Length: 337
Image (cartoon, helix red, strand yellow):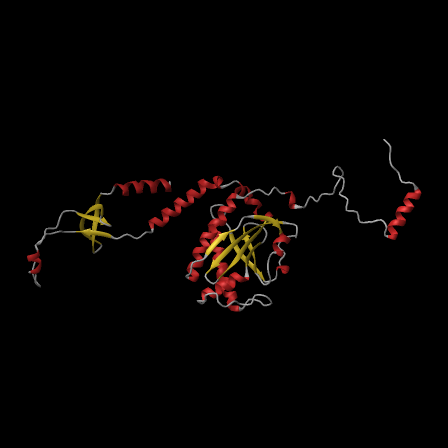
């Protein structure tokens, strides 16, 4: 195959043109697609960025729990919308944060690495305004200042609630325990990963009466490696475990429910004339029955005998009258076995 080789005169003319500016030394030509190109094996762009259905369910569960916590804290309704799960470079996430932001570096034990729980300043000011009865008419200045001690106390309350609800939301997937390491207001001072490392981010938008703001959770991709299969497998992977936990939780809550038990010992009939004629000291003859009926909300549940036990009046159960009780006892015994 013939090869095109420049002559010495052509080479000299080329160098002369480059020195004089007649030839552009910066070429924008694309490299040969069939040639060899360098590749960084440490670049996490190689990761297949599929959906994480289970993580989406966890985020939705966290939003519901945190909404209740915010209502109990502010006594006002907060609307929380969950953004999509995004896999982006760490540098891109950091550039999206404003200054000042409340950036909390969190260890999520037993996972390795450091996560970020970030409160947008607008959210903090809206919560402070709502907490003290404001209606959003007066806007605080955001830029160029740090958070006051009062605002930091509110932030701590918000973070404690977020930790508790985060732990509960993740419970069906993994037992996680978030712990605060330190906090910053400037994103430039937060380095939990290299700029090119991939992180998993979710944004929660909180809307209050006096304003709205965002809350971000940022997890390094390497942190969730131990539970990645569970996050990407979908809800069917842990359905049996979730149902089991739900049934056990429901069982425990139902066992703590308080009921009013009423026992009717005797019943007699009087006419209206007899009732109106009653005076102090009158005696109404009655006959104590051999057994009595105990009711809950008017429903007979068991019959029993009246007597005393340990010096107190008592009723001894002799027969269950409600089939649901027997069925419930059998179901509870099956769950405990």
